[in-house]
Amino acid sequence: MNILEAVKKRRSIRNFQKKEIPEDLIDKLAESLIWAPSAGNLQSRKFYFIRDGAVKKRVAEAALNQGFIAGAPLVVIGCADSRISGRYGERGVSLYSIQDVACSIMSMMLVAFENGFGTCWVGAFREEEVARILNLPISLKPVVIVPVGYPSKIPSPPQRLPKEEAVEFR
Image (cartoon, rainbow, N blue to C red; front, side, top):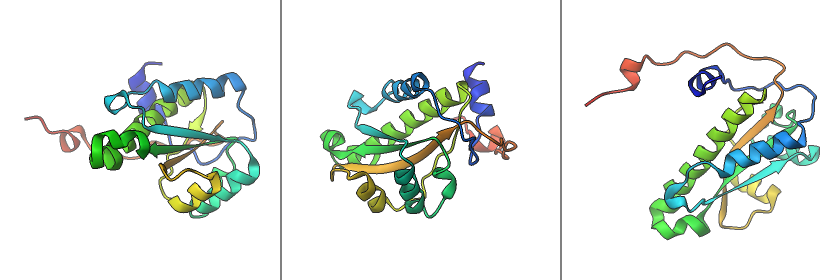
């Protein structure tokens, strides 16, 4: 499968099979996170791989009770690290580190799709509560929650804007 095909076929998955992810594939997902580009190559990001059922349940509750999160065999939480991104001042903290996490997560989502997994970007959650659950240091800000697992149901593709509306050439 080529990359554009993967981008077009990947879906947000909210229903997962009760099937564990093999360790070698979890390692592959972790590797995809660290090889993503980052601002100034500072790599101002940190990721938490959650497999403990009780912790996943608490994270799902902190994510405005989105229970499907707890149903995934793996939940990845991406955090921006202001301790590192602070080298670029306020823009580094408020933008670059967020971009670093986003770029890493997209890379992981494509590798997950390539390996038969479904993922879903979850941005609706109580940040302070997730930070408390993970006992994060003050420098780490949770940016995204991504449940990962074998899909039990794949939704139809959503509507997209036509290229003519989304892209402007000058």
